[in-house]
Length: 373
Image (cartoon, rainbow, N blue to C red; front, side):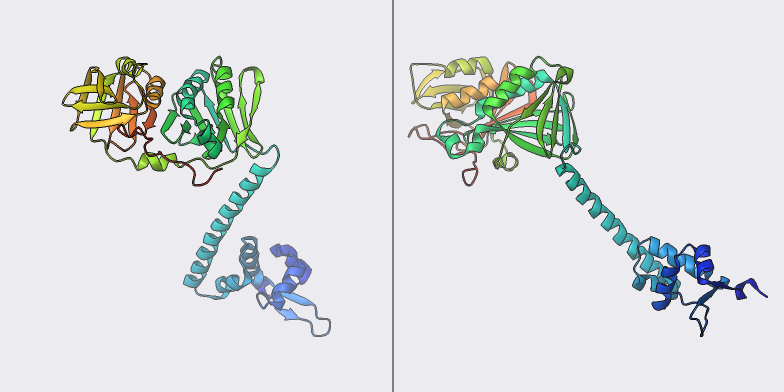
């Protein structure tokens, strides 16, 4: 007698193919794997060795999570139909696994003591320097009362850098700490800190060779030397989309490179009040208060002549935040944001809004939240 003619009880066949007897009964009821013989008197099911390959295939398909409707195509369809059904199921399985992984990661981030969402290591002195440059642009007084987020510093972790951003609507300061002084891991994120807290952190951080920033579902922490940990108090709110502002800047038509100390000295005077006007004509730069020229610091000027006015305190603060002997002013239009850069530090950018010099009125604001936070 051929081995394929030997009949096995459902229990013996189940052990041979790795399926439970209850599963074999289910597949019989679904007409996926009917037995070779059913005893009419007892109802006992018997299987042949010839059914082993089909039973093992059914087990594999079910272990792969394939529904019986699709499994039946693999079991009874053509080779091309079987391949198409298997490839479609594999694609769905990958998508489902990715969605499950994302959901689990979100849950883990919200669990107490879960893994950090983002971490960074940054030099303490670099952080203190960035705070010195950015914090003066934080809003105070009525502007901060109307838009509390403008009284904060935005800290962003991502794109392999740490960024500090502040604006009072008339000045925007952005300082990036790049890989030479900072390392970032995890997903991009950002948080708001009050200006007073940021100043306090700078005083603490300046003495540290480096420190760690950790962001997760529980909050934000700084890790210092000898295991010291500082929990930060974040502020809820939506900060203005400063990237949209930077990306929307038109090309500069006028450039002024001046001695930073000389230009600063020209702005510090008690003899005049009101806006200060910078005017270029060829290679000559003049500084005037209310139409009276008070200084002509040496400068390199490119582009057509231009006249642009500033609140002297705002421009002075932008100059003080820079480093190095030179300052570069990039002007796209007399009433548009002026970019203030330093040749010695490309990682720091300041935008200053001009004002109306004749009427002595504030100029356009750089940007603010649509509604008070």
